[in-house]
Image (cartoon, rainbow, N blue to C red; front, side):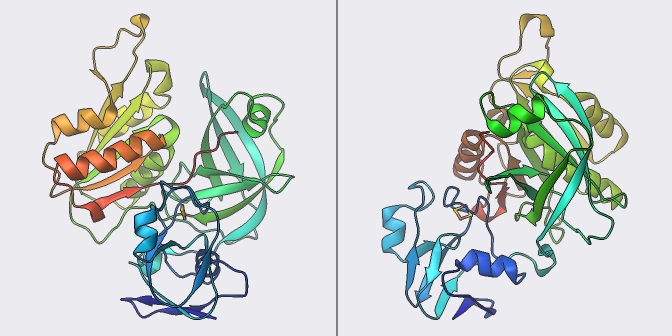
Length: 336
Ligand code: FES
């Protein structure tokens, strides 16, 4: 079976029982996506021709009205014959091959009471390439997966940095925060995701993060620094209290050094002994009050789904941000 994408006219094969998205990723076709799980709606596209079956999904990812209009979720749609879908494609350079490989934990550092910075060593014989901002998945023994954004720009040491928040009671992060030791071997697969800087835009950049959503923002800043780019960039990082801004000194130092970068930390619940004199409240509200007109910006948002959803809604409706200039990392954050 074949799926054709319009307007690009690209076509690719889909095996029996395979979803449109799985086939696209397998063959390096740049469909947009996030969670791969019917939860985020990032892979939504419209069917123009042909029949398909749609597996289970969350209503917020695809409304009944959208479904009636022919929209589908590529991560859940299994074609029943040839299919034509309407969908914007990611830049061709966006697609690196997805690989599965073992990796070794080389360091675990507690950066905040509930955040660990993990570094992984990838095998020397694997050609693992990714864009700053993309994510990998851990494949656990029972086959379930956990998604984490890479927090460093690709480097020649073949190391990957991840920021993990403890979800008490969750099997994976309980292990990370408990018995996990350096040298442990884990299995990963990636890179995944369409959350990376669009280099073809000259517009100023807003990087909006909450909590450990800072990880891909850090990777993007590192990549921009390496490329000696000059686009005006501002980072808004929202957390609860001062201790949660676990790389505050790092990002503040980057902003001091790089003329094109500004940093605005925002705390929603500063503690009395934080001595906080900076911004308070919701991080996307702080952005809206500073930059009420975002019609000439590109916005990249990553973090708690509630923050990303509110930012998308409000920045487009109230700050004139064109909807196609809001990029978000939409994978379902690991709950365990
Ligand atoms: S709903 Fe398909 S990728 Fe998230």
